[in-house]
Length: 407
Image 1 (cartoon, rainbow, N blue to C red):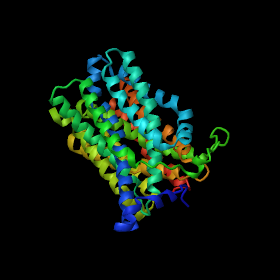
Image 2 (cartoon, helix red, strand yellow):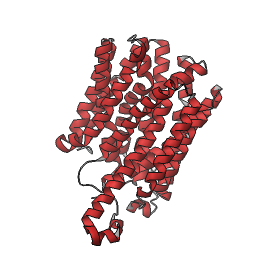
Image 3 (cartoon, helix red, strand yellow):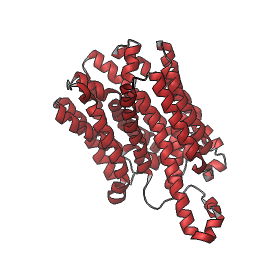
Image 4 (cartoon, rainbow, N blue to C red):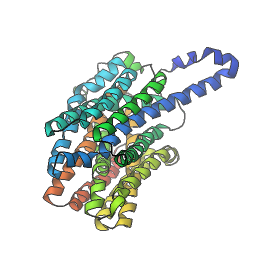
């Protein structure tokens, strides 16, 4: 049973009900809602990809070692942790629509702040705020994704996360363009900020205004008093998947440069193929889930993640490693959409709070994975660090196999 009251749809475009027919007007409106939700996912992904695309330049400008960069990258998960206790309650109290719009504005506004950093502490502050507002934005936008999914009879939530991945690819290409134009990091981030503001201005009208029944009643649910074990396990599954995803964002280029010894522009080949594969996999996710079921798709995805990472470690050559990174991309593509949808439809916990629990745990993997890679690489080698992360894919498969709430 849907957790959401969609009776407000009966008030859609009254005049169109007479002129074109209610069903046609309703379908058109729902498709516009879906597009708006996709664009907010795109905006959120574009912000992160914009930051990730200029990490090497920021690292060079501030003269950071791998360990120093790893330390500073911890500022983002610290910001995430700081927001975790109250972000879900705020989304529940004020509604996901308001926090979706405000959260994305503040998240994008952090980019110019990061671009202005000339000292390590300034970068740390910028990344802390990036993680903080990213948490609010992530909870609210994913809540909108769950609500929009409930408007449709077929699976569509994978396409939202596909939009996030597509934004990552577009963000990377934009980064290359900005480098070619010789724009500074700050100038690049200002352009990205303005682009996201355009997305917000053109799509905010169609972000769902209504609240879930539980949110409307201002549920007093407390996870600490009555923890839901299924949500913890869902968060752990997503942690493993997103840790694998995070290292691809921050370290795939470094891996191709230092381990594969890729020449010139081919350094970005691993990251580019990973992003294309992940985006494609997320747009295929809805079809795969509808045909084979979420559980089977996740179990296979976990094995594909591990296969890709260990192939990159055992065969450190440009063609095998490119294929390996594509496998990782396809494997991680299914984890987030499926897990977030299952969590958001928990009947015992308000959607915003349920997603806070799962996304906070999972994004710790996404944000903490890259810094940990830096430390392990400093102590041993980058290949060893990738081998350790490779275990996470197997853990995804084992946890899904044991968890009964994923059908």
